[in-house]
Image 1: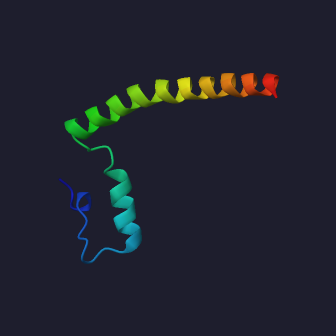
Image 2: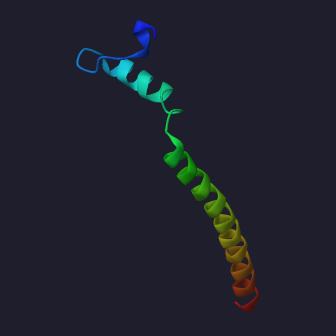
Length: 65
């Protein structure tokens, strides 16, 4: 490992801390990765159906009103 792979948070500037945290977001582990995939797989259809339902309800209320 190179010396630049690790950041000493006691001596690092705010910019170095931010840059290190952004570059290390890929290493989240299996559990968090599975959680994110399950959330994406479940929330995307839910949002789509909610939006379609909203449009249908809005259209129905517009015709009635």
